[in-house]
Length: 99
Image (cartoon, rainbow, N blue to C red; front, top):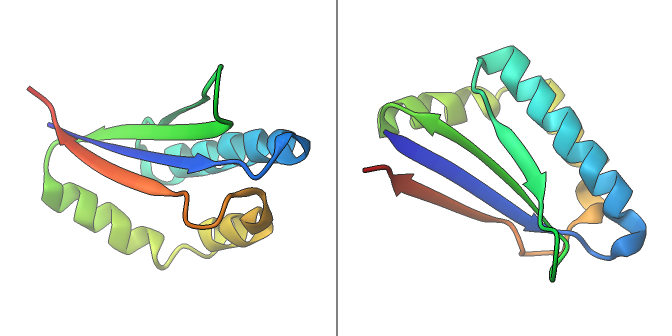
């Protein structure tokens, strides 16, 4: 099993409510559209960072999901709607092979 983890840093406290709204909206959309069981959350101390993660049985499955996302207009619209809440270059993706 593999875990995909994405983090993104919020620009400042003024846009934190927007970042939380995005996390909720995008998580709901992806779970409903792709049955991914994504979980999202916000760091409680230190940096204002949002986290998402989901598990997949294989890297091929992750590739298929990514290909579908590249064609998903609703997902693209959400990304565009909230593009100004993130620190530029702060998004990080990690794939972890679970033991």
